[in-house]
Image (cartoon, rainbow, N blue to C red; front, side, top):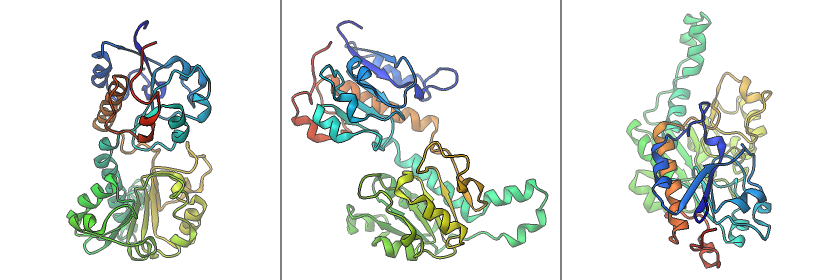
Length: 342
């Protein structure tokens, strides 16, 4: 690797065969860059360490955290942290900015896959699909009359967070003749109107919706955004869906809302603690669908994420500005653009 930029890819992106879960095609982006040599990190790690930051110019990160301490040493070589996904709450972005490290993500790869899983949850809950699967398997065929589903025509879908994913979900849901609501202070009423959605505040959305879907990013303003007060506004017949991040929801409040039949059911791909604890009450509830923060993972989704993420590394190390740069303030840092090879 002498004379070249060194790029590391975290090992948690490998499948059981030791192959990249996004396929080998996207790796051609790195292979075709003559000034880059890449490798998988020596070990599977929970977070990026100062030693790793001193070893690589860029790291492609799946689930490991990137804390401030990783870039605190004087021998820090790291210039780019590229997240495999849209969320970057696992990266200490302010610390990266102070250290002159570019942080990128892959937002354009995610809207359709995540919107699709939100609709999958919505349809499964409305039709009581998981419950009816259990009825069939347990020989309770004749209990079907007492487990009627919920028709969608004229019902209301409320989306919390109308960014790329939220707007894609609203567009896709329109075909079901659902009324569409969105709560997002950063999106204009006119913009939502173009896709047939009405902008409302969060309490109005919780009161009026038959299905509430969380699509927001996790940050200080959205942590525990949905708690007991919000669940108490929902209809008893309504369903709650989270395809964003676990900590946006006060999980004990959700559990209580389900236990008390305050809401009809829920589906979640994310949890406050991940991996989820085996004794989490949500895992035992018949009116809850749970998946391991991976329902949107498909060959298409992962290939697109890797293609965008790896290209951002090539662009950044080549002295350019990546298309999806999270911390644009870093461009004012002396290390924020380009750089010499080791």
